[in-house]
Amino acid sequence: MIDTTADLEALVERARQRPSVALDTEFVWERTYYPHLGVIQVGLSSEECFLVDAAACEDLSPLGALLADAGVIKILHDAQQDLTILCRVSGTAGRNVFDTRIVAGFAGLKSTISLQGLLNEVVGVELAKAETRTNWLVRPLSPEQVDYAIDDVRYLQEVRQNLLTLAAARGHTAWLTEELELLDNPALYEAPDPRAYFQRIKTSRPLAPRELAVLRELGAWRETEAQQRDRPRSHVVDDKALVSLARCKPTTLKGLQSINHLSPRGVERYGEVLLEQVGRGLAVSQEERPPPVLFPTDKQILDERTAVVWSHIEQLGEEKGIDPALVASRSEVKELICSGVDDHGARLARGWRRAFIGEDFLDQLTQWPAMRLSSSRRRRRSR
Image (tube, rainbow, N blue to C red; front, side, top):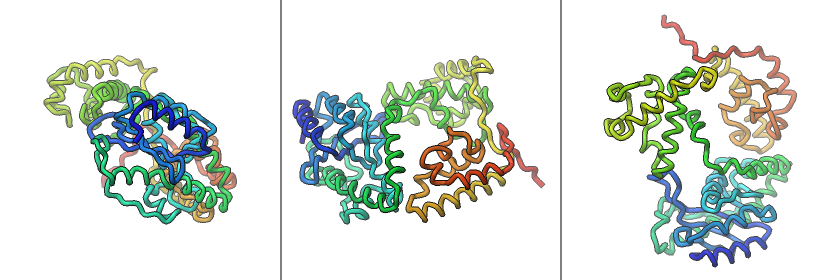
């Protein structure tokens, strides 16, 4: 167990002499905003695996030198979450990342496969699952915890080689390289902009720009409050309460008391600041309000076109041995249909995904009549 900064620096120096290093993290993330890191696994080979006691090491910044070293391949499974955590504790984003989950999607496997499933499929190893919900902050670690943690990195070097062989046999090396290069973007691991969080809040029906302006202020305040208190967002104010506030736009404490999903305790603790955020949103000029969310006026046509495109993706995925879920989600298919194949902001309209779908098929999409969009869904008349 590496439990001092000096020993961590020595391990990082050794790791930087290797062509590739396997990494993983174990953390607790149930009642906090930020994951609380317990253990970092570092695998130099199948025989040389180390556990870094993140709670004991006073300074984890030496990890940054390894993460930033483009000459060392960092092998992880479902890399973005782990790298976001490691970026926060080390101050450095990862470079030259090999995500075994992503590459599995190019190798005839599901891109949503778990690490346990991948190891079983690719190297014939079956891992125990007994420690999946363990508390990694309690010391000392049990022998079972140590074995579990080490096994998560012990086989990743072999997994990488086998996945590369499977993907190369299907002719997908260039595409998977392009996809992995996206993980070198430091923005993936930065803290999100609090003022952009409102876009992730789901609503049962569309909000008008004025309501969206209120929701933006409320969402930004809650994000900052949750970060400062290190509490889950829902422990501050629930999403549904924020949406109700945006719709009703109360201006008094009495008005707050009638808001759905906002508890009396929430009113007592946050009432004044919630009213302040509502006021800030209402004061936003029309030009600075968020644009309305646009929806096709004919949902049936959108569903029919989505089914055609998705069927095409599934057929190609079966032929080429690429998981359709890696290519796109259904929401991304709808985005392509609504925005058009010439919108290079749509992920399906650029890079290897565009090549996968094929220019001939995309040309067919351009022949479809443009869809009419509206800021609200058309309501069917009752008969």
